[in-house]
Length: 252
Image (cartoon, rainbow, N blue to C red):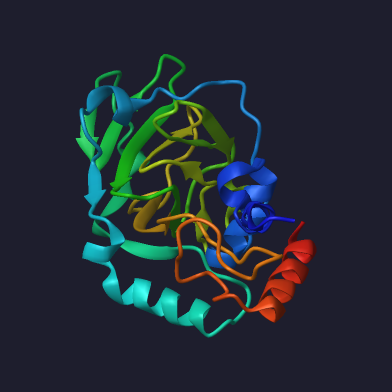
């Protein structure tokens, strides 16, 4: 079995189903539940109204060197699970204040775009770009959305993933499903006539989970890493390879 098999098992976040992605991302930011189906598409406010992303970060080597060093140290110490990403702070917090309930016009609000659709739903959308990233996932904090609210994420490929507040944890934090590529679009819509939350935003966004590069693991026969050597390879240790394979079987 080539190392590519292990890379697949450890990198389901990037190549597998949504459910598999959530299993893998639990290694980085904690577990999440299944996403929710949606029969209604998003308005794509941030994508259609902006040329670039509303929030942008440089590559991790420039903006999060300490976090990369910590990731490197963890993996070089051969601890499990292998870590393949970091959580990075945004340049400025984003705040989705849907209590404003605008008319059919569109305006900027809280680092995103706020509008209302023809069905009377209040809609807010934003976008985040992280240079040289392979996969992204946003952390929504203090989520206070009314019942029936719908959320979506997508990347430059355009395929949307719908979800709802069932992903919210007991502390009010919600990690979105992940998307591939350096840009993540997020949109939320609250039902028409839904009561507004108390004063303050429906949620805020301060961090994004980032996968920067592919994981290189040792080849089973030679013990040498295939492809690009990274901090997450096993440095040719067959015993470590077996530990990684066992962990991968548990995750599968």
